[in-house]
Length: 276
Image (cartoon, rainbow, N blue to C red; front, top):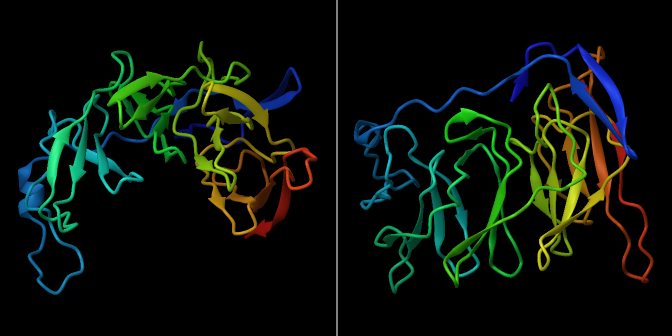
């Protein structure tokens, strides 16, 4: 997402979390162009390419407005694909030789009736479940929604996930935001979720589906950033949309708590340098 005036901002304090928000209405990313089978036909038939077009394309329900996207590999070797922006999801199961080219598509349970996101967080949890959170669009309308859901591949069910109660909002919305925010699974298996429109982040208890705030000292809001899990267990991010008059973008590192000796330290963000 983007904002019409990135230099116009105000700061306010809600509880112990400092939120920076814009004073203008967000400008959403453009919807994907309409798709069709002509797009597949236009792909080059290059036998030397490492890429192979699947002979069996996912039979999504709305190829024109939505179309296949958000592929994610599950722990059992199957692949989930969303009908991007629509509620239907599809699973590709390889054949008995492990070939995805000769795999089979089956439709899994659709998302809850009120949730049909586009541009959202997605992750596979250590127990094999899949979580999606937020969405810049809901039912192809700009929403910066805070809805979420977890998919259980064994039960073939989606369970709604309530947003963090402490998450703030932005830009005149009358609801908490997650939007097109980033997420990651930490080294200890904990799912960490950002709020697109504030400096806030949260950790999910995957058993109780409850959230705990985390990460102090964030330089700017999380808008248009990514999180990369480092080999030492920390998380690296680069300021993607600098909401300040400074022409340089900062990199920051999320220092995770040290649980090795039973002591839980504060998880916070610290500067890792400046990118010109």
